[in-house]
Image (cartoon, rainbow, N blue to C red):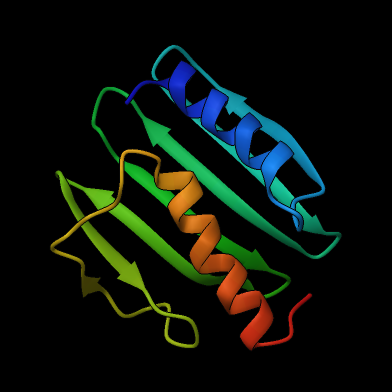
Length: 117
């Protein structure tokens, strides 16, 4: 994964996902990128990736902070479950080679189940 491929995947998600209204490139350096996929004025998905360290963070964020997330740190993925985001649940299977798309599928299920959108 690299920053360019990640931005292409985020653009694909913007065009293919019914609940994503807008994509904002929040910050980019030669080594890192932060993207917000806006769902509503109060709800967005934040994508952070560091090419150098391999750190990858995906979070559904609401007015009070993170609602759900998946992170890769030191090459290992874990999940922050909805309703208990301080918890770290190991996810040995990791994520697919299209992690934003996979995460957005999980977010869609949460949005519908919890009637957030």
